Length: 114
Image (cartoon, rainbow, N blue to C red; front, side, top):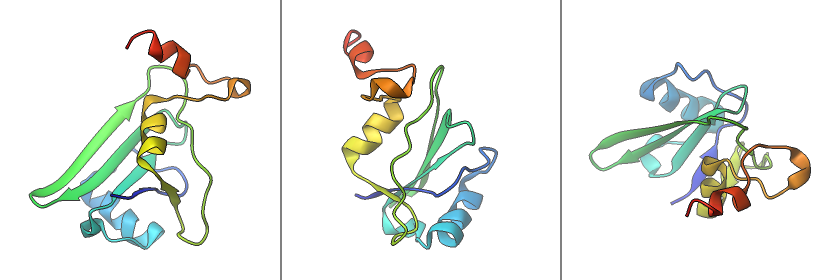
């Protein structure tokens, strides 16, 4: 499975079908490909993950209580932010290993709860 972050922020009021249109228009992708498409809001505090399964569309949504999501580097060749599973997990958890960035959630803080 591959994971793609949509370039630029997205209005989080958009639903499944409008997000499918963004996958096609902004990313040049096809929602039926089985890939996961990720959207984030302007403040990087909320994300939505859109994925097509054999039974239909699935939409996941997460809002951080504090801090912001770390956005990976943009790849102009694919017109998106290609990500691995581990990149997605780090992003969804709001983890940032770089102490200089000042985000609220750190991997060391989360390990205390495991």
